[in-house]
Every structure is written in structure tokens, then in C-alpha cells.
Length: 78
Image 1 (cartoon, rainbow, N blue to C red):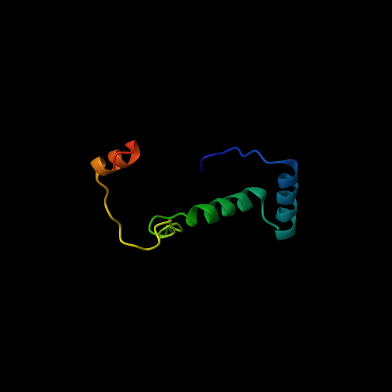
Image 2 (tube, rainbow, N blue to C red):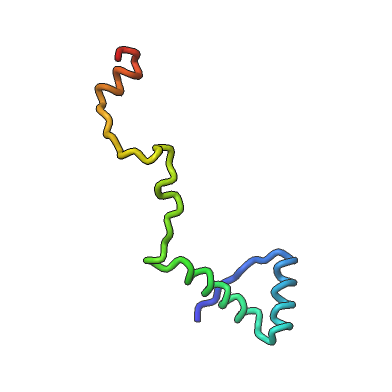
């Protein structure tokens, strides 16, 4: 098993120590469980796109743009 170092704030370290004492599990075991929980949420195929369809388009079908029309509009010639 590879070894990894993790830096915790004093408060987080104390909460981890108390959780280990309360549950009778080692701090390392609790950290491994936390890593498993975080990494299992991001497995491929379970990704949720929250911004899909939330743009400013108002729901109208996409209308492509013409570069020449855009140039004339921006340059004040259209």
C-alpha cells in the first residue's frame, strides 16, 4: 500500500482524532474511507452537467452566424 502524507489544520486533526476514538477505528482507516467516498462520486458515466440548457438563448433553436454579417454589424456598416 503506497504511503501518502496529508496536512490537516489543527481543528481537522482534532476532529479526526475524536472520530477515531468514538468509532474505535484508526485515523488512517477513516482517511481511506473519506478518499473512497470522494473518488467514488466522480466515476466515469455518472457525470451530471448542471448548466445544460441554462444559457441566455431563451430556448429558440440555434441560428448560425455569418462572419460577414457580424463584421458589418460591428463596424457599423450593416
